[in-house]
Image (cartoon, rainbow, N blue to C red; front, side, top):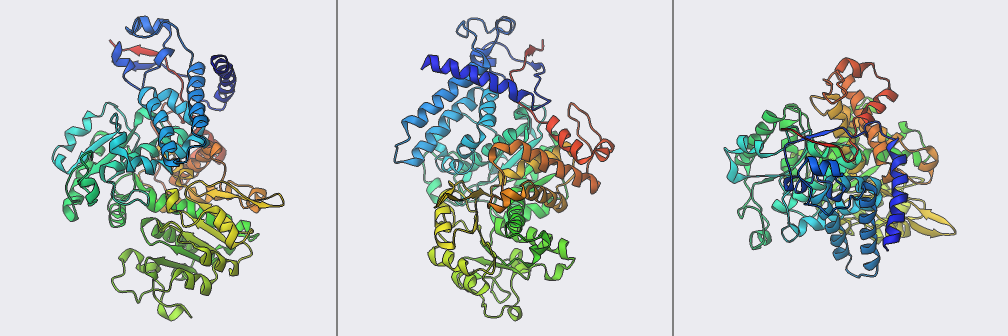
Length: 611
């Protein structure tokens, strides 16, 4: 085993040396630190474990605190991969897949707690394998079990009990600069509901993806939990629960907590971008409306999900062999009128209006359903956010308010059936078979709810009942489906990770004052155009996760150019020091290169102690 590990180390060394040439920002620059001795070993930002060279051990008071042998970065990398593959081998026949997923998360989390540089190199190089562990779908399991898994705090926790203290609390964070904050109140974690303070796992996982996909510096990110209580009685009664044991704040009392937090953040880091994550619908829309023109922020559930869905919908038109100007004619049934579903409908309507120039009829081919069926203007107590997309009774033909999903699919014969309901198995056999009667030559099934158990259907079910010629996409990963005679039913993971890193990175390096609808649509359109015609005809709408940094660079560049066009770009004070006039002069290709140059890449930096 040891012999095999060092052979792997040599392979990894050659692989990493080749990969370094792909990024211009990989030459490690000295890192100025204020710590010494054991304090360095306990700081995952700067700890190198046994990788400290002897000169650093002498200079930083580490001699004698580590075993004498210096282990290279490549050897450390190989050692971890060997341990992880061993875990995979030993658990491959384990029936409890949740336990296996959590075991994999634990081994990665232990590395994250100890050595962030090695952790992020492992993550970047093996993103296809590890994204499902640190992000969707395993992150849902982590949140559900967070009190039992908690070992070491990561990020910051602001609670209702901290009212009046947040301005001073924000200075407890050790980093002098923060570029990106992901904030949640834990009120709607994935499709799992109110998980209270356990929801911190979502900002942590999202920011790990920001580092891996967009190259944000891990010392400049901050996951935040805003604990305003929980309405989950099971958590309140749990003796291990780590959050406030009280009902959630509501109304102005709730908003005053968020206002105070925002003021504290922007006082210390006025250029920080804040991504709102997993807020229940009423607060998702309220906070977006309240803050989007005050500072640089966006809501990934509302806007990121919408962008990924729009990219998939545009790709579906191409897969049908039609020009993109046919998109306004697509009949789309959207199931789920929460923040994500309404976000998708809103962005789709905006795209149609942009293509046709007719905003008043842009929603005519979109049919929105919630748990009570088809939403029309006849619905009593209709949520105000859904009103613009409710069907007018005079324009529905055979449709009626409250019609079931099966009835709507049979009557409308949609080109696309898109689910963001959070209800696992909602697209049952009868619904999927009804999609065979679609008016499209190649209907699309998008089962986008997360985590996996909440997906509206599996890929195998979709291809079995809706037909082998469909286009399929899901929020969580599924394996491609073997259809026989050498044919493959390709599974697309329509996950926000293709978009939110590029939105955040583009906003950061452009110095955007706000994140606008135009910037979001530019991001979605670039993602949609990333795939070749040959890939699209196979039913492949989204690229391989292995290309995530390339995708993010392209999407980020589209956001930069949109910010420049809308005169919202103020430039970026990174080490390259680019102003708004410089950004305006860049070509599309130069903008992509500019985004790439600002991506952080994990290498051990020489440590210099400031006396």
